[in-house]
Length: 426
Image (cartoon, rainbow, N blue to C red; front, side, top):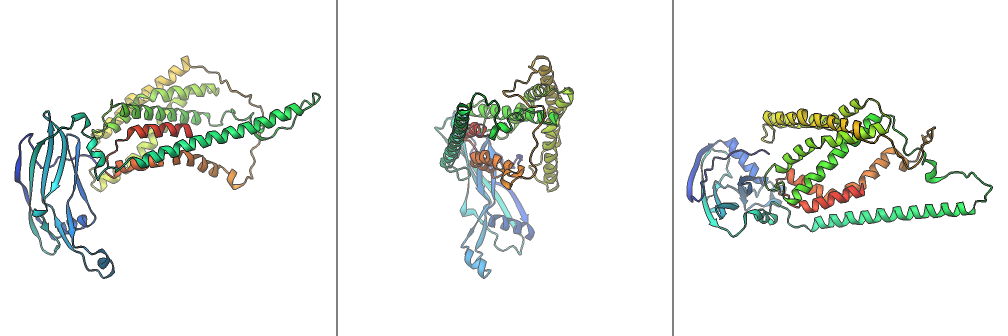
């Protein structure tokens, strides 16, 4: 969600005691909304100097869940917390910690929503000295109830990825050793007069492995876009790991990802055009254009739909027109020219000869049409994507929780390690 300025007025090193924020007359409908939000454990989140503060808007006392589910009674009393107490830690004239508390002694009973109520909202502000250094101010949030409690599950994910890498390496080694050993044995047993031998196994397709695809333009554009995303992700994670990009400032990682992806367009254009020329392509400009739109256009369509839904529902997570215009300007004035620049560099300086390790046969081998289920294309695609996904699904869970669950993600070292393992497994 985008930030909205709150009506709370806080001045540095100025303590406040029970200052009235406002007095609001709530209708029965508004009280019912508050009561439902408290029942569903809604909480608020505020930021001061990029330090998050979270708290619940109310509480329910004497609630009997069993009786409520069975007999419809035992709802308990619902209380709203109209008073907030802000506590800021200061070190060397810098705010290094921020917390907000609710005062239970000033709670307001809103159990009865049949009649309107007038509620007065107040707040207090206190500044306390802290020994915490400003550069280490986010470490305290690692153990917050709104952040992941431990890193054990992350290390289990890393161990799982390492085991996958070892197993895949061992399986491939065993398969190659057995195949090569059988081939060497067969060749040693062949008499000198025998020149030809019936091919079997991997030798049946070795002449078709490096055959150029029919849709070489689309294939090269996909490879170029993938290289661009791969390099961009690696640089963003490396900058976050080394502290060059602030992981505590809200939106800095996303802004860095958009900018780095824009400048890495030259990588996508270069790699796509280079591969296209190696496949004896002629219309390289078409390949460059397709590389420039292959990922951004579908992403823009998905974003337009999601942003339109957010605007229709009045959500503050909807991006304003100025931000959309800025992203569009980055694409048209940076991404597209740099993709074209990469294509021109590949056309003039890249090596255009495909040096395949095996010779490609002139006649393509016929692909069987009737195959078992486990040899079908959908099944092979599913199995091929399952292993990489299993290597990073734990980190994906916490990333999505951080994005949509308003939690804090700071384990970029583990995320970088998981990304490297993902590349190896893939």
